[in-house]
Length: 105
Image 1 (tube, rainbow, N blue to C red):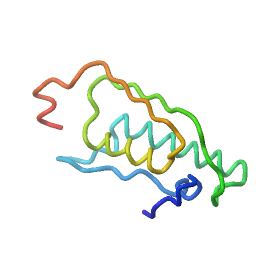
Image 2: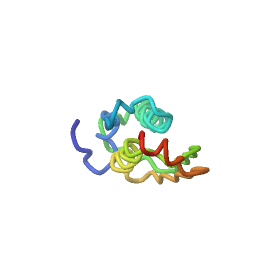
Image 3: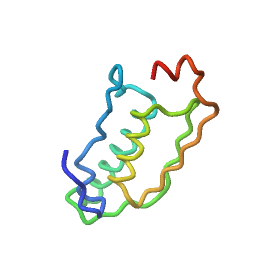
Image 4: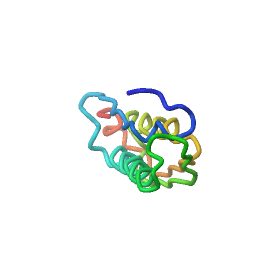
């Protein structure tokens, strides 16, 4: 993928890249939800005729998950922030992963 030009316009042509740990993480709920946010932003830009750039998306994305996000999902969160710098990302979770599950992540 390329790098966004800072105005959020070129970011709409890009997609999030999953990080593979022991296995592919592109089906994690967090990754899918953030990919859907990016797809919705791309669709909205096309609807207003700004898919080529010059369009800034502002707002807040709230993401709640049941456990501490894995490193791949944290990476997707950082990618979204970089691709859509004027969009705030608020993440919350209920409980940390149990020790046995954390070791598998």
